Image (cartoon, rainbow, N blue to C red; front, side, top):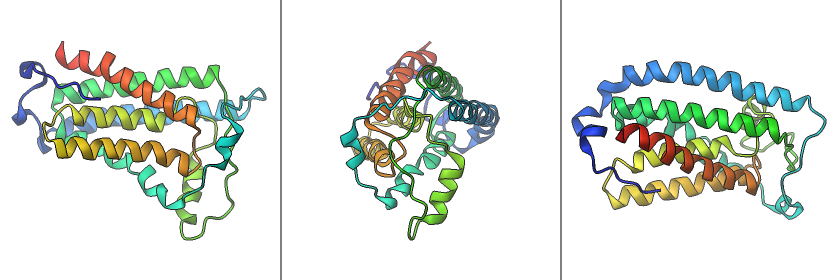
Length: 217
């Protein structure tokens, strides 16, 4: 994941980053968020009405345990989405917005070509976590699977932050965070192994081919 930029003139110095970039972040986040809402839910709606859905998993994957508490790791994507506001420069924020948009459309094409169905059966009630799971199930139909957009976006966001620090402690924390998110989508039974692998590869590919090129010119 580590690709440290040596051209500081292209990415900006430390003074280019900080809370003063929040207005730029908001201006970029609103259209990107709206696009995600329309495309992501649109793909789920389309696939839910198709009859030729694929089972892109091995039967033995269905023995992966359901760990309700991992929902909080799963939801930590929301924190990742906020971090760029203060950790990236304006140039990097624009590059990230472009990268996230391309990630969305690549995933959407995959969802159209590979309409899938989740193999795990969603529980009707989850003790101690029922409210949060009912919200999750209401928002996410079990069809946008390969690649996992949750994993792809998480990896892309973590990679951009990873690129802006020289602290080995932070690198270690970010790698651990990325690993836990990849595990969480399996342990809350939202995705299968192929979804995670393809999401990981998509996130890294977009980071290298789109984001890094945009910030280095």
